[in-house]
Length: 420
Image 1 (cartoon, one colour):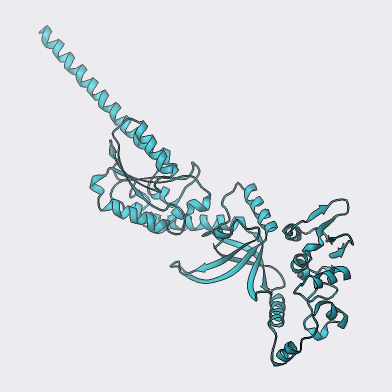
Image 2 (image 1 turned 120 degrees about the horizontal axis):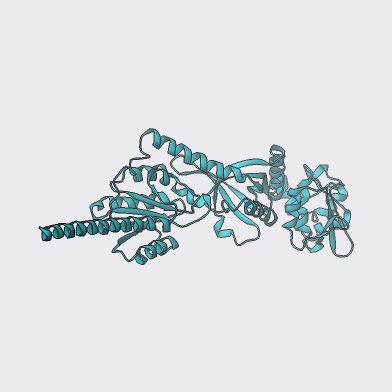
């Protein structure tokens, strides 16, 4: 089956092509598209002819005369030959084809063209040059930026950003993610257990077509796939490298070698104020009935500012550490990339060198960050608070047992003294 687009004479376009997942996702992004299983073709209202041609013209489709006339009448901006390709220049296109797609000659425009390229011709030639340099999709690695503010749109425009070792932005490229491809990516993430969501401040590896959007003269990459394993693997690789370096310096057991007080009642808490983690910790401590005294310091627990925010909170408690028995760092559950912001070498060093025990309750039971390797790992915010309650309860049990032993010993002595 060849790649064809034909007008059905009844207000619709018939789109035929051999199965190709990427093309299926692209067609699904078109308004009003409908799959006709008996005919094995896609039907799209001919009112969408401009969107159809602009999307598929570079994919080797052939268009029938009716579709080409309709496209020209609708003001389509591309000039196509019968195979759907953009001619390299106007002189090589058949005169009949030029009459379909070119407006009547404008003397002023012809005069301007004699002095140089028109904007549209310049854009067409640049687009053709880019297509020649990048005939196939390429894999691009970058940090997503600007996605969240456009996430409500059917087609999402955003940027892929490159940063240097200090976190400074050194390069970016515009990207476009069409609705059908986005749905396919989200479906794959769902099947994988939703390890992360496509959004700002995560580093991804995307397969994309390099192109120029001719109407705006805008260079961009058009996304058609996401490498899920890359994002997860990169986060794990970074975490393992940080843990390795801290281990070589003997920092992994430094904080956990400190003596945990028997009655850790004076508690410092670092978390997002008012969050589920904040409420879970306070509720667990309050319901114990013990006299916990909690001082909470708010911090960002997701995103690029997590490191600086948590370091600031740790510095505040460090200068007042004599007032506290223990400090808790807590954050509720989230995707693996949400929690990866705690895989920070400066944070790991700060916790390892902290002068009093630091209890880490970040994420779910199965999650493990760099801080879990250097602090007193308690897995979740509730478990972190519960570990303090259990320690106080154990100390109280020992105190009561000692008291019973003393009373029993005193009673025995009194009894012997009475018999004497």
